[in-house]
Length: 344
Image: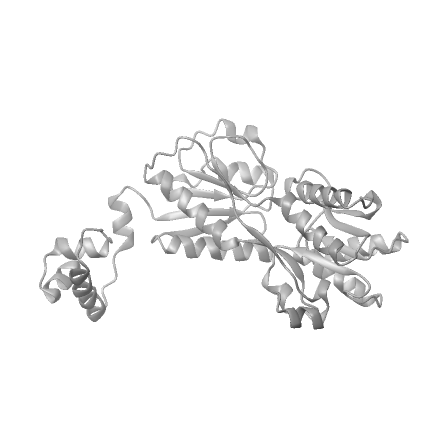
């Protein structure tokens, strides 16, 4: 039997309006009254009808999240952060997979599901500014990732150039002088371009050569792509003393190749990844990685959607930089130093 507001009001000996104010978290309720009503809610097991609450506001209670790669651990962890942030506001999240294809990103951004969602959070790869410039759909749109479209939509990202420079600076500080980059993308990819740029800037600032022969381009960003890129560099006759990978799966793929070739990580070649996914923390050699604040990205994205829905005065689109940090582990410090220093 479903418990109603009327049941809670009768149990607590208060009005239905008072119960509604507590359930909806209105500010002008005394702590004593809030506690009294909450005791009745807990005792009766009352659960608010979220669908009805959203419908009364002319909303569905659903936010769509469109990602390029659901199988990529970074995007899986980011999705979890968005879902948790949305749940805190009584919203549910509809996941969509674009595959990073422009046609699918256009379809999603133009609102083919507009009737069932209140807002859209989109992480585009191939989408162009022209695809969004004439967007007719008025469902709030928040963009994630590094491409700057210079359009009136909220945009949340980390500073990829600064993050890449921090990774290379860490390697240089450990005495590594020949740092390879694996994961430069064939074709347009803003994140890859920015991370290569950071790699190049930091090496140049340190007075070290940013040798294009140590940059390996790939078509994808998975484990196999990292392994293939590492093999190509080694087969070219080059022997870098460090590798900075576009992401953690590529770094893990590269480390597998180094192991198969009898090279030690980090003694022979140090490795740094990007995204700090859970997988990198549990390998035989734990992975040093750039760690974006995924929880903050998820929270900021949801809050931006809800602020637009709430009619808050936000005439200008927000450009928000989420934090990042470098988590140092065994793949650069070695086992003894990583454990002894308690890093990561």
